[in-house]
Length: 299
Image 1 (cartoon, rainbow, N blue to C red):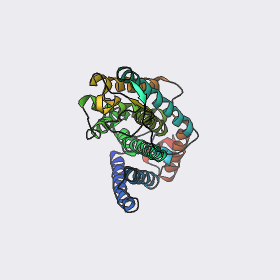
Image 2: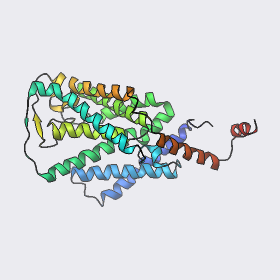
Image 3: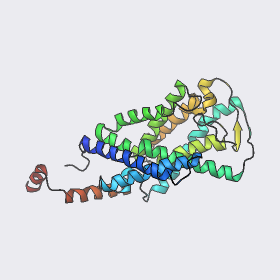
Image 4: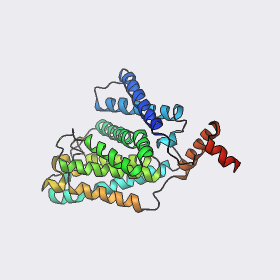
C-alpha cells in the first residue's frame, strides 16, 4: 500500500459514524454540566463535544495523531493563524468598502467590556466549531473517499444549506456562503490544518460584526466600534443579511480564494506532513504484511 493510498470506503464511513455517535453522547453529557441557556453555553457544549469526539476517534479508531485531523498544534500553527487573521481582515475590508461608500459610516454605540468579551468568545468558538464541523473529520473522510474537489463542492453546499435558517437569507446570500465554503475548504487543503481557515473565519466575522458594525449572515452582534449604514441595492450590499448576502461579499471571498490558491507562502505544513507520515508508517509496521507488501519486500 502506498503512503497516500485511500482506505476502504467502509472504514471512512465507520469513522464518521463513530464520531457522530460519540459527539451526540458527549453533547448530552456536557449539556447536563454546561448551562445551555446562553448562546455561549450552547456553542461550547456543541463544539467542545465535537472536538473531543474527533480526537478520540482519530486516536483509538484511526490510530492517528491530532495533526491528522487538522486540529493539532505544530510549529506553523501560529504562522497559519496569523495568515488567516490577516487574510480575513483584508477580505472583510474589501467587502465593506462599497457598502460604506453607499451607506456611510459613523461611530458605533458604546458597549460594556463584558459584552465585548462575550461576543469575542462566541465568535471565536463558533468560527472554530464550524471549521471543525465542515472542514474537520467529516470533510476529510469524504475527501478520502471521493477526492477533495467533489468533497469541497458537496460540503460547501451543506455549509450553505446550514445557513438557510438564518434571518433575511436569500438565494444570493446562499450563493456567497457556498463560495465561502469553497474558500475555507481550500484553506484547509492548502495547509493540512484548520488554523488558517479558523483565523480567516474569525477575523471575517469579528471585523464585519464588531469592528465595522454590519450584520453577519443575518445576525446582529450588538454594538460595534463603527456602525455602517446599509443602503443601496441589496444585490450589492447584501441588505439585512450583511455583506455575505451581496456582490460586495462575493468580491471579498473571491479575492480570498485567489490569494490562497496562488500565494506560495500559504502551503502544506512540513511538520504536519512529517507527523502524519510517521503515524502511518507506524501503523504499517504493526499491520501484518499483505500479499502485495510481501512481493515488494522480496523483489
